[in-house]
Length: 260
Image (cartoon, rainbow, N blue to C red; front, side, top):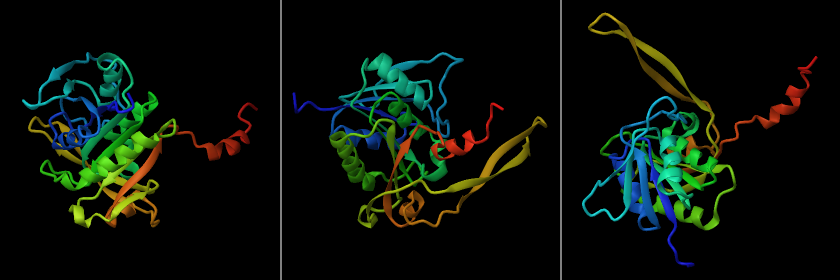
């Protein structure tokens, strides 16, 4: 019984056919028993959206002929995938949920928009240890091989040591060859933001439409942030909590005497 393999739920936000999730599955199959529940189409930047005003479908699929694990394609969001997996497919909590590998970074402020991380956070809400993995490469031809040993090492440590209640890991990997990656750094989330703009255009029918554009601004000069780690050749690991309370402001807010 002590040698029983852990049950690992794999999901993502780029869709079940994305190369990143294929890479993640290949690593997880060396560690445990894998079940995949992932969106049937890209769900990037969906945040923690869930489906409440539409039907949800979740169908078994066979992505490769030699697959020895179960996979399900879900019409919903990444958070939907985790909910359906635990309640309707696995009928129990998995030992671990991993999400990704996302095509593109989810460092700094991007974590709040990320479907990849929202899947991991949803697992954390349900009491499941969870990790979101992202590679700083948006290309569908991205090379995930250099990431695999770091993904495996972090996953095995989480399975061995566990995570505190309410905490999940946000792991971002630099776009480098394996020999160029300097190691792993535990970081805080950088204080950065997007300066956004809308490119206003006109459709052939004469209707105005908008295309979101923007520039990412990192105002954080600290060398203990995820942005610094990625820029300097390290894998960044940020512990993320879903309690959004600004605890440091509670005392000041109480001084407002709101009931007067």
